[in-house]
Length: 334
Image (tube, rainbow, N blue to C red; front, side, top):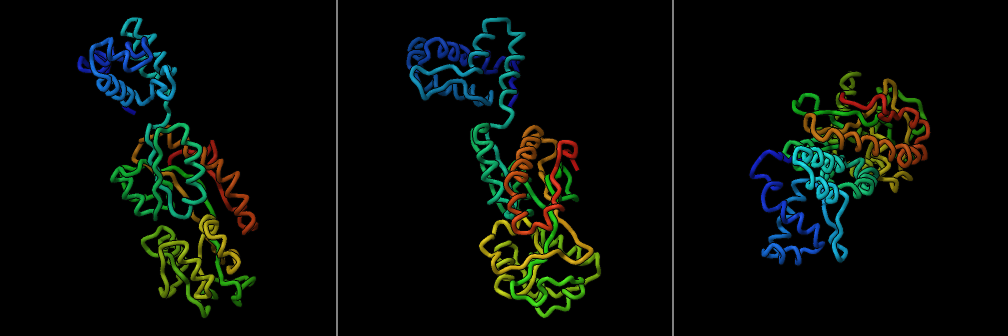
């Protein structure tokens, strides 16, 4: 958040903007303030807008006539009647009222964009002047983060090898085995080798996606080599291919929730032992937006608990116990 240096002579609090602000407070009308100061109404408006941007808050309610002073404007007006040594504390208090940046820029992986992002937008719409949400695969979101297109991303890849990032655990969910509804493997307790010997191939997530890399890492750990016959980098393409009987796949509960219309043609069951899971993180540039990160994690956990977990239980009740959410005690950097 922008900070105001009250010792700088060129600062807006020590130039004509101060007089304009006080005159608007007195007249509660931009036109009357302009007339009293013998300047144009445009100059009054521009000065107030500049002041509001510097503070990160809106000072006046312009939707009513006469305009009214918001609590921040009243605080500032009253403090200006006292010594300037107290003014810095007032500025800090005004800015601290806005815990969130005026503009909230968030990136969310595809598998959560439909089920998590809208609820977050609704929650934060009353606290941010503007909200922008981008979705995509984890690698693309990381690029957006580095390029400052977004400030916080919710991702399945913590990008451990990259410096300059802060990572926070959000939740963990198990991987599931997804079979065509009429597969002869439905309901059987399988080994990984039996899956490898199955007549239908593994439909993989692309290597450029976090899910694809996660699956490849797990298969490598258990020394299982599977041919790459069909690959896709979106959940929809992978699940639709399985529903069409082209093969089987490994995916997560959140991915399945986005495509409930396909569930009638899919069979879900636990993956063979050893199983594996997917962790979701909140990632930002190092030590930036700490209060906002905390708020995003807190609200996301509430959404997961109240909305996503009940839906997960409907499609795979045996898997929900393996879902682990961030708690107040576990919340923090990883």
